[in-house]
Image 1 (cartoon, rainbow, N blue to C red):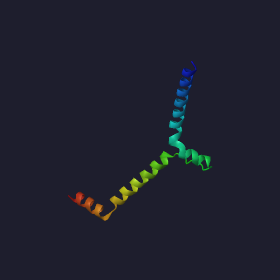
Image 2 (cartoon, helix red, strand yellow):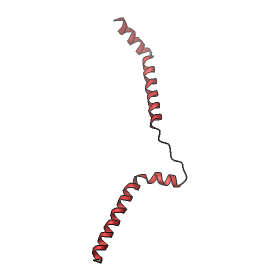
Image 3 (cartoon, rainbow, N blue to C red):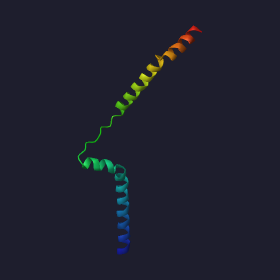
Image 4 (tube, rainbow, N blue to C red):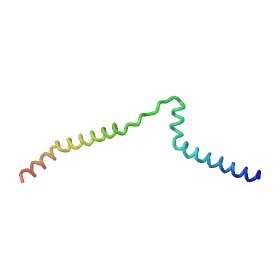
Length: 79
């Protein structure tokens, strides 16, 4: 009975250790950075999206106002 109990509790310990390791391992750099006193960077996906949209708009505007694009548009309108 002692052997079976040891096997069961050893297996449970191994399973619990593996679950903890799997959940902590991907975040170890963040954990170390926070433990060192560095603040966590805020998650702002909408700010990144707004910057990307602005860059796209600027590129479209620049492409529409370039001399080559203006000439092509005028040629298409004239045709």
